Image (cartoon, rainbow, N blue to C red):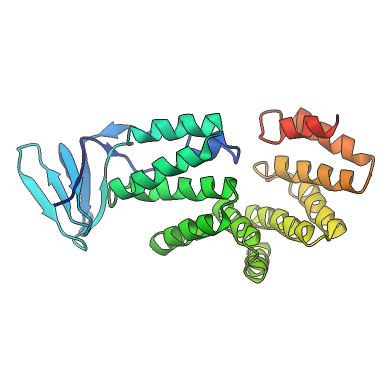
Length: 274
């Protein structure tokens, strides 16, 4: 059996993502380590001391008494392993801007940790890294594979927006526009705010700069409660104004610098006012 062996597991829980710059494509939460375990089909958690997975989805869990428990595909809900050591390398490479190197490691982790929790986590990180590299087709492939096994992920506004950006970059305009319309009509303010920014990008890509400006500006002014998207909306408003030689651009660049100094857009805003 071709197996993946790990001595600890990753506890499930919410994953916090810092922002969209290179370094923060990586999950910035730290995860507690515990004994490896499997959640069987009845929802019972079975702890062990070591865990292995095979390509067909079979899980081998070594119990504390040394007995090896076999869980065939379909007989368990989830299995967990600890954070792979390779992920430290991914974080280091991302911080240094070596996204190609990070992507290569993430692909290996996906394969080596299949069915042990980190395959899907690595897949999500890989989708973001591919998007940052403008490998739009690859990002789409990763996102759609994740959506197939984690349908709930497609309801997360930030990931939907990333997926839309990948579709837009790949030239799949009709699909992008359809998702934008869905999110704006969804009733979720976060989804609507993110969708309006993507719509602005779509308009800008089509050379419709005035319409793009309106989407960015509308988001910056009407969605002040959506703090996660304000730096991007404000910065893109400034860029769009500058393209129109509008003197208000400087005010919006300064707004990014002063109000969002720790965002990924602050340094770009400083260049914008030079």
